[in-house]
Length: 67
Image (cartoon, rainbow, N blue to C red):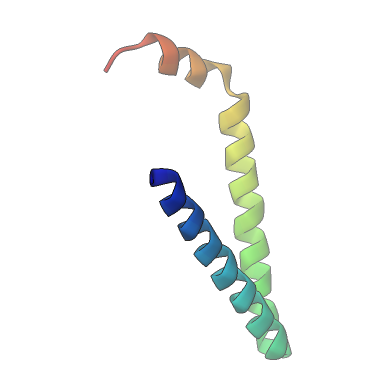
C-alpha cells in the first residue's frame, strides 16, 4: 500500500515537472530563467546525492552508532 502511494506521488510529480517545463518553453524569453534555475537545482541535487552515497564516514555512523 505504501509503495502504491509513492508511485502515485512520483507520477504526479513527474507530470507536474513536465507541464512546468513545457510551459516555460512556451513563454520562451522569460521562461529561460526558470529553466536555468531548475537545471541549477538539479545539478546541486545530484552533487548532494553523490556525496551522500560515496561518504563512508556517514555509512559507518549510520550502521554502528545508536541514537
